[in-house]
Amino acid sequence: MRPSRRVLRYAGIYLAALAFLAFALVPFLWMVASSLKPPGEIYTMPPRWIIGNPTLQHYVRVLRESNMPRYFWNTALVAGGTTLFALAFAIGAGYGFARFQFKGKEFWSLFVLFSQMLPQAVLLIPLYLFLDRMYLINTTHGLGLSYLVITLPLSVWLLRGYFAGIPRELEEAAMIDGCSRLGALLRVVMPISAPAIVATGIYIFTVAWQEFMFAMNFATTTRTKTISIGIVEFMGEHVVDWGGVMAASVVVTLPVLVVFLAVHRFFVRGLTEGSVTG
Image (cartoon, rainbow, N blue to C red):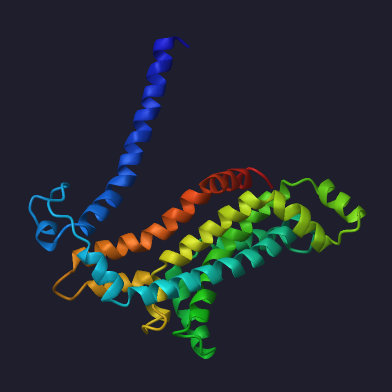
């Protein structure tokens, strides 16, 4: 390949990457900018990027004069609990599918994947009836249980693929040295699978953190509402508090962004390696 063609090729790749980056970042930057504008500037026409008089009044209202701190705690509790339990179940199920032979293995493996394709709306009524009979409506336990339903299928599939790519000889060597099957899983397989486990955990946490439909129907009291529902409270029938909406959205987005940036290498590695094995 001639140098000029190579330069053009890489230039095209970088331009495409910059265009995609701009497409992804512009809404976020506009959200941050709007959250720092006083009400008069938010409604200025035509809209302006430049902030004339930056203010934190919207953040003060969100954090001190609303129920968002309570909703934030509810969301952290539900998302954290869902992540821990879903990972525990997904590790066990994924390892079972990857290592053991049993009747109907392929059928149940595909069934797990196909169940991920069901729209959440299809699950809404059955889950509501189940949680209602179990007296779990308007409880964080019930909300977390509903999130397990929508996060487990893909989590099991991701970990199954990763576990299947780990040589069996490593576990057999550990069991020869005295480890049980569970000990080999905990001491050999899980440390090697850390990237996939972290990637799966981020996926579960993100889904539980931002989920809206189940939270809207299963958590209707201040004691159990989550932040995705709290943002709606800044929207009235005739008036929308855009400053509050934008400030609340920034507060909602930052924790997930910080977690993702801290472990994004594990996330990318876990997804790519898990998708090509098994």
